Image 1 (cartoon, helix red, strand yellow):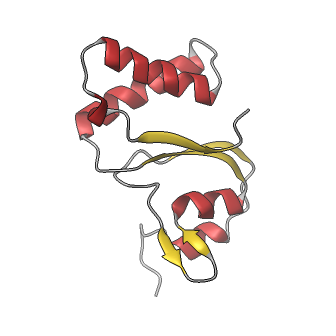
Image 2: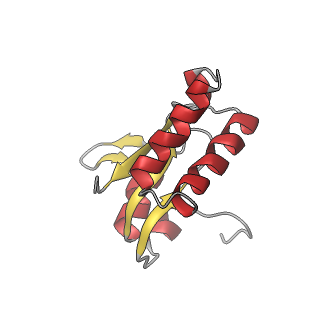
Length: 116
């Protein structure tokens, strides 16, 4: 049944994206489910199947305030410093590290997909 505001994995697979980057900044967005004969099925695989070249996901529960800070720094690195998605995430994480933020607040985020 259709439910307003609910995006299901099958809906993602049916998208036709031409996206360089998809950012999923919520908790455990990089965790999938092991399906016999299919491997790990989750949001990362869904968005990549739909046409995203790279997907930023988190591997565990993340703190809202720290995530907001990380994402602000991340987009700033890409838009103002003109860094690519991978370098921008690294720089945003290093900035938090240098500001005394413990890794559990920012290290959950990783980029899956094209490394270039």
